[in-house]
Image (tube, rainbow, N blue to C red; front, side, top):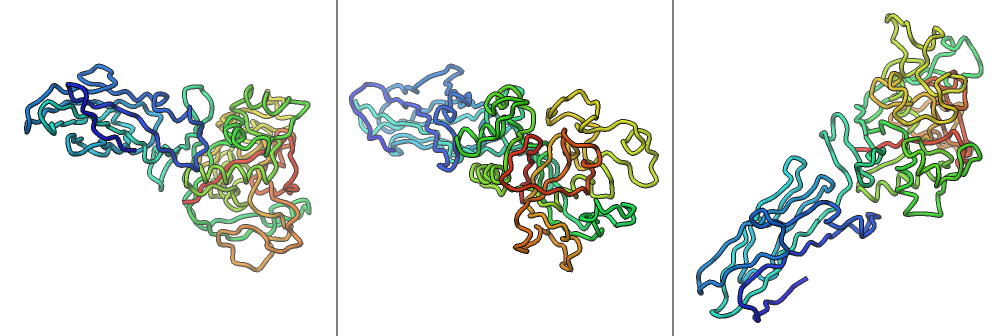
Length: 417
């Protein structure tokens, strides 16, 4: 956009315009993208203004004014600042990277008149070159980063926390001896070495309010199933925002991941079965995420009939159906994610093959069998509020038709570096 100088008024002045250049791939409603919603203000000498007026000056004499731009903490962007006419007006600095620590920037605006007894009008543009939704609190190789899906301040899980999981080789599955030869567990045989690359995984299962942000953009497609127990999807989304989304098919979950990828420019997907189990066991052999390792004294875990740190059937946990995604903190995986056991079954990327562990392949970042005979079902992991404790074991494998929308099945996401 370009504005030519206007020569009809006595003093020279800047009009300060705020324009948001959002990435077209980001499904953000225009009213959600206004800078006014992001708490951006223009101040001169501490006062909010709409224009910066310069006193008339003689030819060759430059006058300056100090302008402050204040912005809130809801934007992650780079401000590009430029004027409509660089012949008469100058701005310094001309770009400002966003900083969570620095909430304002001071600009110096200079004006040099073009001719005596004339007026020069210029426009100062503040453009959000990239309106990104990723708000990182740690480097990409440690700790947590947080994906902001919508506004803040409502107490909802709108920030999708992603935990960095360092890849390495671990033992997946169990030996038949460990299961006392019980054929119910034979799809977990044999224990085998798997090597994984680094990845991020959601600290929590995807919540109703997070899925609702996606659903608003794609409705009526990918609408979760209504349930007689909990009500219609929309009521559930708004009245139980911090609970895991349920009644979603494998295709619904994958569509959410694709939307998330387009929105952020990152690579989101469902966890592979190997990634899911690695996180659940905390990288070491555990029956449940809260189980102690060999040699440690176990006084509280479910193996000896004491406390169960999961939302399961007959668990006496106080929840008739699902529980909030941040419930059962004592049952957290050693890596940090919650509810890897119980609450909802979680969709995995892989097709289900009961004999996959007995294949001869070298397991490096495995994504399941490619055998056409075993493409009918997808893997689900973790058990749910509707299942007994043995279904919540870290190594337990189950299968579900990808089109099914069950009231005890949800998902969490993985981000690839």
